[in-house]
Image (cartoon, rainbow, N blue to C red; front, side):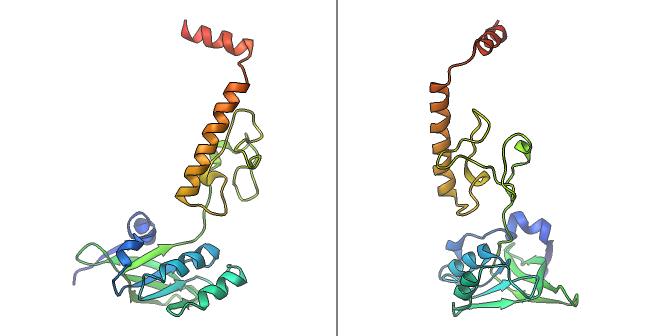
Length: 208
């Protein structure tokens, strides 16, 4: 069978990010989850419900996940841990779907291949807050600080929502709800904060 190799970086947008879980249902597919933190354990526990076998691949012998999350993952019958390995290449078959993954032992450099039907990358989340860095207050991990439960930042008239502030749930539905709160906060701010005389003059000059 002819094969086409995809580097990890190249595959991120095609086979490396979460595959549709619905496609796993009813199929005898083996799946890997790459990562060693709580996100990896949480993803693995959920996806294992749909997979035949699931392997958590982590580049270190020790996991960064909390003890409780690691214990929960280890108790799932069809989950196994593989360390210290990291994905080197995702390989698709003739159908164009992910077929195998080439793993590299991070200590010895030796490689091996394993057949998989899905791969999930759960190696953390970095908020895209570079645009506002130095302008609004940020947490040490890069998330924007807001005046909970509102979406107000420390800069008047600036509101932050979604994955820019949420380092706990990071789900589409929670981001959507956060966006709604931000829209309401912005509307109320505009209602309760009339423009200054200088702003009115600037606006009039711009329209002229």
